[in-house]
Length: 504
Image (cartoon, rainbow, N blue to C red):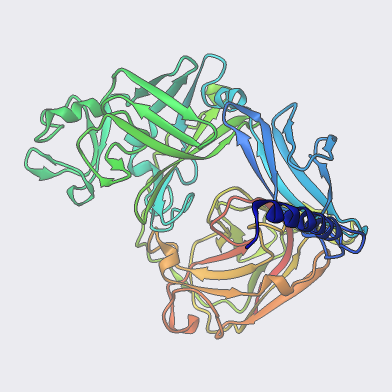
């Protein structure tokens, strides 16, 4: 039987052995932290909501012992998890280089957009106040599945702007003190009952209405809150890109649109997602969205530095369903070397524009060409119709269409802008929605070279896109030719060059 002292003596013999074992496990033969395994650089960043110029970086790199941070503004750090404060708002590229003891390293870069809330608030509300209007040229509002999309329905696209002037005369003023003014100019747009509208004097009264009209608010006098006046405020959350209007009936664009769907009853608070707020040279732009379950209402507003630059509300409503005289040309086209240098065809007003007679980017001494400008419109093309008279074109004597295109490498193709080129044919005289019955010839832009002229040629009986039924040769109502470059459903701009559009 062991005594207490014998157990004590045994422990003194064991402890040195344990100590030696622990010490040995950390000896010279152990691979150092980060060792010879290839490093992996990884990190996350978080902007301080109380100071949006301050960013905290959390390092998740593996197999690394030293770190070198480049914050993209000329500053750097060797800390593992640094906190950096930028001197000014802007877009920066952060690069982390993670290295191990063997001298191996890996890099990771991330883009961060630092915004100063006071600068953004200044764009929204000015130094004292700023007044905004829906766009009076182009698409001013619409609905689609995503932010900025208006492909399901658009005002200024499917519906001509002149049809609903009571939407375009509304103004929205944000004051720097947090108050908000909504001026409807005494008119209200009443949506169809099926779209959350209301009955006026027993009728489904979609359209523009005078707010002083008897019974204009239908069966609910509370709708008068949609009219002029009201004690409104706003909250702009720069970090979350959210704009909230507070006050019964306050709205922008359409009174009955909410994130829960169409609702003709005024509500106390309405929140918009801000997906664009930009300071321009002549005008500032504000893009807002009401985001619901499976749908997004988009609103495109503008504020001019000089209020006199605000365009007049359009008054011309296009007449659709017009049947133009038929022609059967032996050839037609346009060189774009000069305005009017077309063979039967000439350009008409469209979202993309062309500058005639510019220098050939490949050879300034060669014949002049056209500069194709893709603007910020989401869906756009350069449109042409027969000239000097508008005609429906019978293509029976024509077999091919071709176009020379020059795609400069100076464009940024890394995002939504592509090198896709579309030549299309549609019936613009028949409907505002000509794209529901059209023919397209589309290439794979990724295969096209940059900084050189290429000729795209298609057989007219082999269109590979579009919604038109049958073939082009079965139609005698097609009256519009269009060219689209850069793809649609985005606002990225681009500059391209075109020449020798030819139907033969």
